[in-house]
Image (cartoon, rainbow, N blue to C red; front, side, top):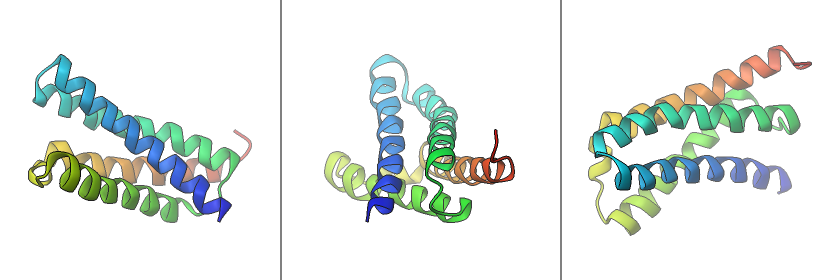
Length: 122
C-alpha cells in the first residue's frame, strides 16, 4: 500500500503542477500561449518527478510507471477537471492542450526511467 501511495503522490504532484501552469497561464497570457507553455512544461515536470521516483523508490518498471502516471493524469482530467470544474469535455478536442501533453508525459516518464535504470550510479 505504501508503494502505491508513493507512486500516486508523484503522479498527483505532477498533475497539480501541470494544472498550475494552466491556471496561472490563463490569467497572464492567451490560452494558446498557455497551452504551448503547458506542452513544454508538462514533460519537464514529469522528468523531474520521474528522476526522484526512479532514484529513490523505483518500485515499478519504466513502462509501468509511465502507464500509471498517465492514467492518473487522464483520470484527474476527465473526472475532476472535465466533469467537475469545467463541466465540459471540450479540452479533449485540443491536441495541443491535452493529447500532446499526455503523450509527452508518458514519454518523459518512460525514457527517464530507462535512463536512470541504465545508469543507476548517476
